[in-house]
Image (cartoon, rainbow, N blue to C red; front, side):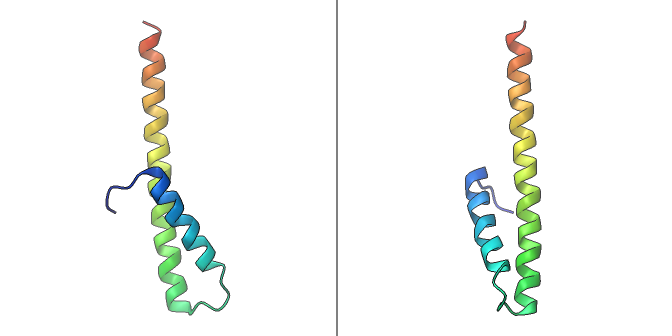
Length: 64
């Protein structure tokens, strides 16, 4: 996955979710969108963990 900001990934995920909820989507297309959504979810989770770790690091350094 190319480098994206969290917001870009989140917006893309929202579009995928809307498409997935479309009951007229062909099964093959649905499967591709679900796979892409799972990758974006994983990416967003990793970005959030990274941000959380950065914030903890800042807090730890402020305590010195």
